[in-house]
Image (cartoon, rainbow over the protein chains, first blue to last red):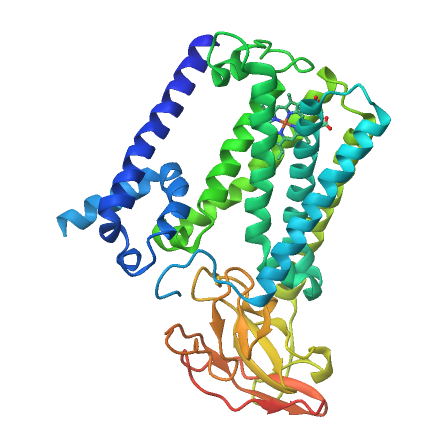
Length: 70
Length: 345
Ligand code: HEM
Ligand code: FES
């Protein structure tokens, strides 16, 4: 059981650590690549969106990748 | 639908509802504190905080889960549905205070990482009665965090509608985890019998509301309408539709909403272009049919979103004969204008 807990919490903290870095990148630099609408919105809105990007970063990661290639 | 993102798409109603939410939460917390200290002067403040915010969160969760079926059964609950998002975020914040205080109180004093301690301080995972119930609360809080943090329209646009919907169905999983968190916790803490009883009644209420709403839906789909000679279907009396609301009918396998706006009837396809929300369960706000799910708007007479928006739904021809509303089951193309017919009331 202890191994299972260690693995689970390891994955969880890794997920959130990557999410934090990724969300910082998105909100500071890559916003318009994710959603052009963000470029026209007030900057403060990004603070509100930040935690959600941390939570769902893999979806945005995929999106960023598609954008790069097209 | 938006052209840029705002913190909140404010309107007067949302502000009123937000004030009500805040007022309700503060009143509950104050009452909880006063009653706790009156009945047990020795109780420590941290314990009261943990209990007050935990029980507040679960009460709010019940309200959130009841709003969906309630507004299907009775449109008078719709304003609550339109304002459910902020209720969800506030509920998460209450649960967060509960979780954080519980972790500080029970897990922050040892050497190990407090989160690890939530999982390892009680290793009785094989037991039912002694199961580490706090783990269940932690997992529920993770789900609630994901939902609260992605509740903004931005995420609706960016995580395809399907994924967003899937994420937000997680509220049922969170509810199940919270129920077990409290029931199992009750064996180990001195949770009062009243709390457990209230939770049990809450569970029964929620299940029966959902079943009743589902039965109502099934009845709408199963009905076979009388036809006139041209194949138009007689669906209801004009007065059965309330001003600014709709009734939903299934004609030739498609759901259609017949709205009454300023005494006149118009029929549009019931399915919102955004994520398939049931337009006929919404009401007319500021002259527009307003989707109950996320508030996309359409003009009833032509199925078009007001400019600058471009969404369009199918429209249908109606007529009234012998005090019956008839609908032509052949739809017009999306966005076709149809003159509303007078309902005579
Ligand atoms: C990190 C997450 C969580 C932890 C560590 C945690 C911990 C605890 C603890 C230690 C208790 C027992 C308190 C006592 O009786 O003195 C408790 C009870 C309770 N928890 Fe949680 N919890 C968490 C998440 C949640 C969530 C997400 C909800 C609901 C949305 C919730 C709702 C409740 C309720 C209703 C009680 C019963 C309160 C009472 O005794 O009156 N908890 N929790
Ligand atoms: S389904 Fe989202 S607004 Fe209609």
